[in-house]
Image (cartoon, rainbow, N blue to C red; front, side, top):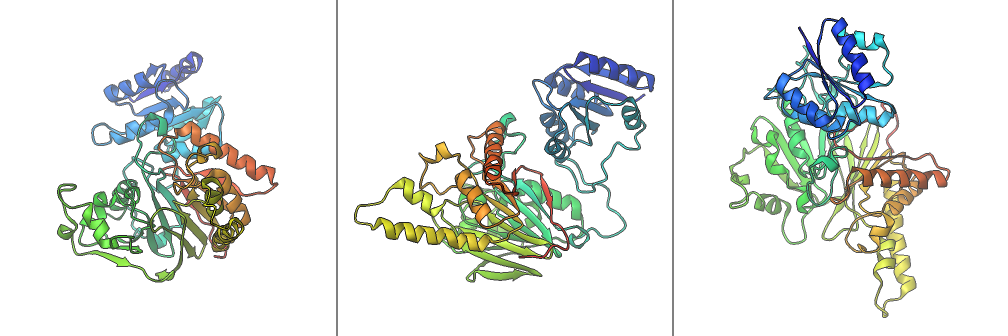
Length: 453
């Protein structure tokens, strides 16, 4: 007899679902809050979990992450998250963190019966969801060429990883973004998020060799700290090329190697397979296979780059650390000997250069760490204000904007408030720019056939 676990603080919903399960020949268990539900799931290992997204003491997102993380210890159940609101972003996030289905209440009896029959329980997307093992390989080889071009977020946080219940929606890993297009796998930065990306690639490719390029924007620790845990780099059958620009005091190879030397890490870079190539770039335009890449210096302490990658399905710009030149100068103040008019002219020109660099970009991923009030006490720290980011995206006529590099002190609620404000700014201008907050696991499919700018 199959077992189902119902986790919901609505007693009426639990009772009706319980009766339906019994009538269909299932054993049914109930929990009225999330913490109790997780404990029961660990104990009874049900075949199906039906959990309300906003259940108390452990919401549905947290439950998915927790259960999927235990895949080595317990049999993995089907997870169905339910919601009374039905926001499209909630559905997307639910599937990304490991739910098999997302259903909007009130649920029809026919829908639940179909779920119990098992024919419609799984999503058809073959991309592994966060925390789940990859599906069995098909007879056709799985290569980047078989996929529609896409961007996926693996780390969206700035400064330091911040795991925990308050960051479960957006994620707590530091900067790492995956781009698949035109037969290439490009990884943007190697923050702590690259660990999960590496595990995912290993599951996907299994015994087939992996060929990846890692573009480093700069070598602050939150952008390179995950590389020692990037599993594909330890397989000599794979090819890992790391591209970036020389640091202010040390070369790229020296900086990457130093974080792996004793006593900081047990395996040095010299002990890794010879399949790793570190290449310091000199030009601001180069190619990765069929992809054209442009780079630009951005405003951040030390030497920091932003990248724009042109694919056959559109372009993606990645600027994880940047502060508006003009905003920084106007808030930080300048010495009396400096000609204010000339300074403003200079900084305006620097900002305008970035606008031209981003002109017409399809997907813009950019540092949006502070709200306007926070920025007043953080001018000169090298990070963006959400108001400036929206203005930049509108001036550049970007098509989609992702707020990125979330402050480690910002919980999910604060990031969502900043997102709401960014969308309001767009609306006040009467514009159609699509704005979202980057969150771990979120996948953005690039529209094939759309010209690259």
